[in-house]
Image 1 (cartoon, rainbow, N blue to C red):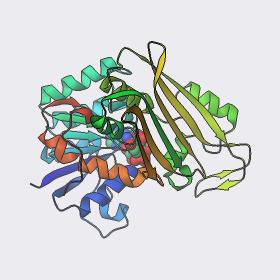
Image 2 (image 1 turned 30 degrees about the horizontal axis):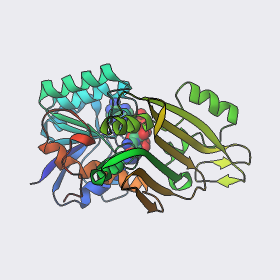
Image 3 (image 1 turned 90 degrees about the vertical axis):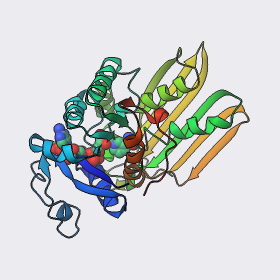
Length: 329
Ligand SMILES: NC(=O)c1ccc[n+]([C@@H]2O[C@H](COP(=O)([O-])OP(=O)(O)OC[C@H]3O[C@@H](n4cnc5c(N)ncnc54)[C@H](OP(=O)(O)O)[C@@H]3O)[C@@H](O)[C@H]2O)c1
């Protein structure tokens, strides 16, 4: 079956989604919606440095006819749920299912309970499925461990460690981890929620609920990583002593016992690695040498989940509700 796909948000991740969509046999690519005046009206092929496609980026205000034709819309605009509710409403009203990279949507029930109820109402009222996913959150620090737990008799603790060399990642990621800032500026921006990875708590709660630790607590700390040498990336010149990334930890406790440790280190020059350790019976350790490259894997998972979302029942769904995630045609 061929799926008709539209896009909402054609920034860096959106463009990688489009590139990947053109390679897929079972996807009919319809077009993309954005609000950036620099790209609205421009040919999508040209934006991707390909041949002209004869399909122009449409402004959000004129998006309804496009979205009405779509089976699934891939939504890649921003990280906070509050900021994307109207966009999700716009897509749902057009009758299209949604796969979104919005981090707070990946498992919103604990951190944003009222908004999660609202999204579920929007989805059910319009008979569509809405899924938030991606590589992180959505896979590397939650789904992998949850799927792997299927071969455990019992689990005492889970430790997940993701290390990302931010120098090979997109500029928006380098910005959100504070690259080039002073330590003081970093601490202030963390305080107001402008710096740091969004989604670690959502991953933690997905794990806590999966392992019957829902009664526990989840706490987060965000620290800067300070450059011990000079770094130059395509977009930043970082001298020694300035911030070159983030070291973020979320820990989960139940009845005074630590059951969960998620540590995410993203900084310039890091040696990328993903590891999952399940302390249980049997104990299990998984290592992804070289790490799971987010900018390549995110478009893959967003599009690979589209057929799963198309077959799911209406409502707000998470990766816990999906039929086994896998590559699709
Ligand atoms: N879960 C995961 O694993 C994962 C992985 C990668 C990325 N993400 C998230 O995915 C999102 C997109 O990432 P990105 O790097 O592509 O960001 P980006 O480069 O900033 O692109 C976002 C695009 O969406 C547009 N946009 C904003 N509001 C819109 C609206 N109301 N209607 C239509 N378009 C709108 C933006 O336009 P303006 O520039 O004019 O605002 C921009 O062109 C981010 O929140 C990122 O954190 C999640």
